[in-house]
Image 1 (tube, rainbow, N blue to C red):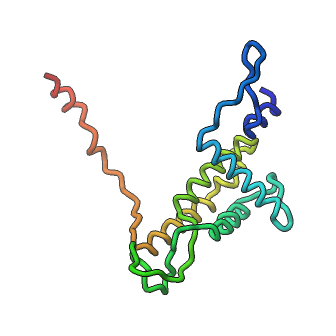
Image 2: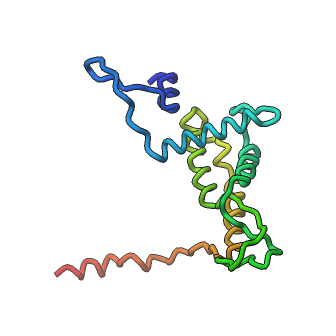
Image 3: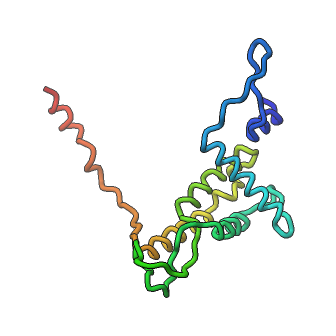
Length: 176
């Protein structure tokens, strides 16, 4: 497959030819693929509007972090600040002036889509700015901060040592 054809597919501008030469409409992209393309275009526009503009090849995790912080202004999730009387309450009884931010789950999904789009658009996994430790740390901090603000503990589950799996001996004695 030529790189030009691959680019067309990634941008959704290809058509499918049937054996008779008729051109048909391409299959409708999945919701995930549509969202990924939209996110990728939004990030590209963000880099173009950056002062000074940033080329994708010069993009690093700091640009990604700036983009995630920029998106907070469009968020819909109330995140109580530490001085708020509703801090730590999952369902506050009254409104407050705490800021709206992007929810952790939305940011996590966005990074997953952008990480995939970066590589689909020719970026190498080794230089993927969406896959760096700094991004993982930022997402973890957002998750923990939002969990504390809402009074919801996020605790990492420890794996139990093979208690779920039957032992080899017991599985052979069960056959009747």
